[in-house]
Image (cartoon, rainbow, N blue to C red; front, side, top):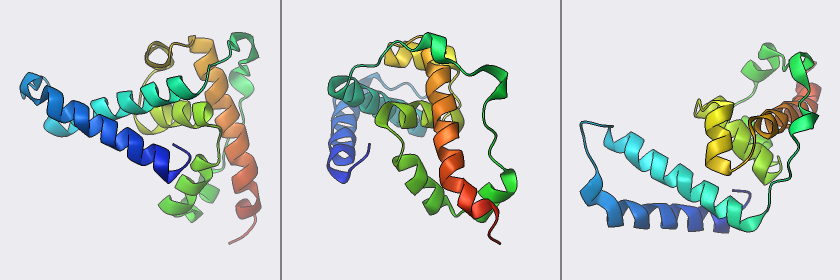
Length: 143
């Protein structure tokens, strides 16, 4: 979320919703972990929607020549170091990156969740990759 206060607010809002709607949870539909995770992700999305408007940048999608990040450089990073780099991304770009790369959402699903087009989702992912490549690049040449 960019800072600890916003993260705590989102977590608080998410768990308030969990407690409010626990009666609607159905174990045959999803595990409790998955159900809670979905609620907290939606709380984060709601929080970001309140904070900023997403520009329609559908035409800015870079296409097949998106920047690639060297897997060897990624293997040298600790999870904490990578997380710090992701936190440096702009809020919307970091959110799209997390939803796509970490949570496995498609661009169509991300677009629906965030109220943006699939092209805008792709653009944010491409921007995240570009910015992460810049952050990781100095580490590619260091053992």
